[in-house]
Length: 298
Ligand code: PRT
Ligand code: ZN
Image (cartoon, rainbow, N blue to C red; front, side, top):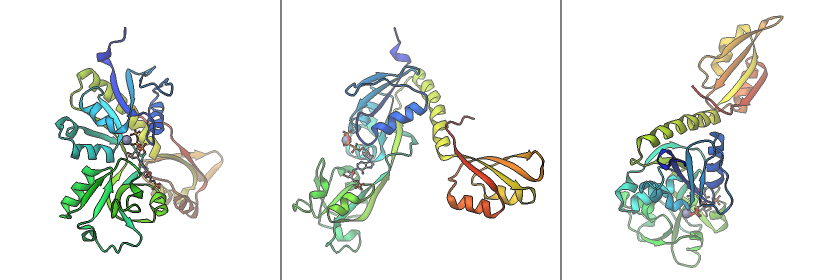
């Protein structure tokens, strides 16, 4: 029999915008999940991890109550619940790391015809939102008085049916706002998905979490890093090394039969964009290869 006390429990979104990326991240950490569509719980095959598939709004409660030790959630949901709910254990949930997916912003938007000058233009207005916690704090911090109209979805239609004068909703491309004749005027929060933890887990879980974090950091660092290989004229080597973004000590190798050229291999920790490559080429580099890195450790 498997000892439950020696397993780490993770809550992720069952279905929705964060579900696929959360699962993919676990796969990249070498953790295999066998899950049929409506399963609520899954025991990982090759790591002492149990995964619970729940609605994103329930993740803070799962983690706070120690039903799960860790969770993957959007900051927008986490912060909103932390403001709204009196439960101290929810307030005590800690963010371990940002995960770099599910990026969006919580914004206030008004109808195109609304003459908006600054935040004071919202004083006395009705704002529809599913994020009462974050919105009321944002307004309170700026001494703006509004009536908050609480809605669970379809917030963007509220001004059209005269339920509200403005909305406060999540935006990624802004296509939804545009389609509904709304314009963004204030950003309440920039958000992305994060890995969170509670403070109630035992020593066994702390150790498993440390093991998981090593893998996760490897995946996250690798994702933002690239392996660059190029040929550099010997007399321009220093100049070329200077252009390689975020690489500390590139490997320099001789090329057989060439004393004017060397091969340079480097792990670049920052984005390698087309303009970096053009810059390298302009400095005399040739045969430039930029390769994604799958995993990195140490
Ligand atoms: O069923 P469950 O409760 O688990 O899911 P849900 O329906 O509450 O959430 P879901 O799956 O829609 O979103 C989960 C999380 O994804 C959110 O909490 C955010 O952290 C993140 N996220 C990232 C987004 C968006 N981008 C996003 N664009 N969540 C929602 N949207 C919606 C937004 O509400 C609006 O309706 O997309 C529309 C706007 O998109 P654009 O591209 O037109 O601007
Ligand atoms: Zn939800």
